[in-house]
Image 1 (cartoon, rainbow, N blue to C red):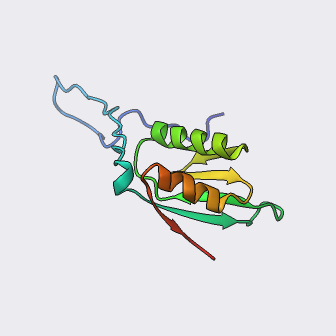
Image 2 (cartoon, helix red, strand yellow):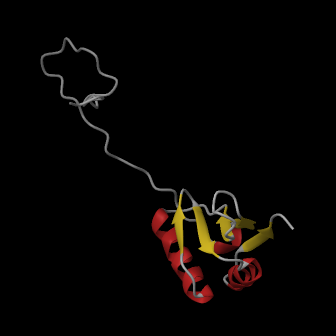
Length: 116
């Protein structure tokens, strides 16, 4: 059983025109990635809902998801640990705040350390 059926024609209720042709808008605009010197990234540590384990979080990236994935992969490789990137932020396992700040500064990003 289908609880919620997605409506195929969003916003169109009824048309009296015999030659009406609905055009679906599948256009999804990705955010254009700003150059590194125009970005302000914030680096912080977090322990919430992780059973006391520390995670280094990088937020504030403006750009496409593929560029975010590339930056996350580079940071994970340089730190030698795992992590993920989703919802516009990069999570690196462990306390690598200072190392990540140094790496981002080398790449030309403006970096701000948040929270002590």
